[in-house]
Image (cartoon, rainbow, N blue to C red):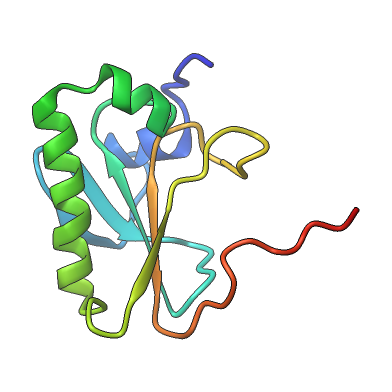
Length: 122
């Protein structure tokens, strides 16, 4: 899948759409999800145009990879969720539930989150 420079996260990075910022570095931006699924629901996105974690893992420079994952860690610290626990999720592709074709990590916290994947109905 080719990167779409008009996806909502690209527009946020360009300042065309506002966000409620939590953290920003040279490599990443973290902001509150507009449709939260938990009391704490923050997204961390790389500033470079990657579609998925697979794309990111192949195309990102070592500095981009390190900078991005450090941003995830810094965001968790700023949110104060380390002690009680949190979940990180990176959905990829249609079957993985990815809604925006720009690699991103969800940080969810603030309550017990329950099972990670629902039981499959056959």
